[in-house]
Amino acid sequence: MKPSFFKHSVNLITFVAIWAFLPSLAMAQEVQKEKKENRREAFIRDFKNGVLLVRLQDREDNIKKIEDRGFHKEAENMRAEQRRENRETILSFGKTFDFCPVYFFYAKDSEAIRKGDFQGKVFNADFELVELKSSTPIFTAEFSETEKLGIDGLIVMDYQLLPMEDPLPYFQRRYVFFGLVVRSKAEMVESYNEKLHEYADMLL
Image (cartoon, rainbow, N blue to C red; front, top):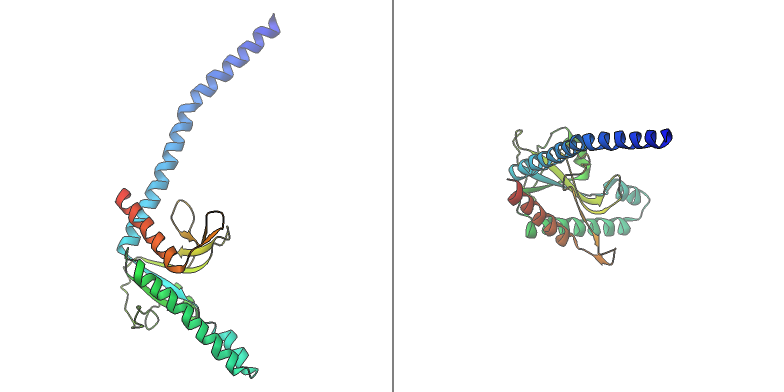
């Protein structure tokens, strides 16, 4: 009888302990959820009041090496291809993104952008230089892969071009529906723009 009574007592104590712990667990989860919502709300508000700087590739170092080896036609073809890609990126944002102002910069100026040196390096869709106020929230973006997950698509970063993490909406996938559908740059930008507006309507 004693072992049975002891086992019953242990089970009862365990049940009571778990029951007592549940409110604390639920409260901790609620606090964590609230923190995530606050982070997301702050992100959306800053984004709405800020600007997005999109990084364009230039590949000048690689092209210069090809030119130095005498392959001038190949180098010019690479330049033309890069110009087309960049133009596609600019048009994709110009046609579909209206959540905040969008400007552009070249990859060669990345270090300057990280340091907040925008003078003569940031331009609009018409390639006209623009000036940015130091108080304006800055976000950056490019078509690339997420650092940790390797997700290919539109990636949004902070003002120092550092990756973001959940629960912030910081990427839009290129491949959807189990990789069966490949979205264009314009489709990714449009989808991300809609997502930001949905969050703003919900949180702000």
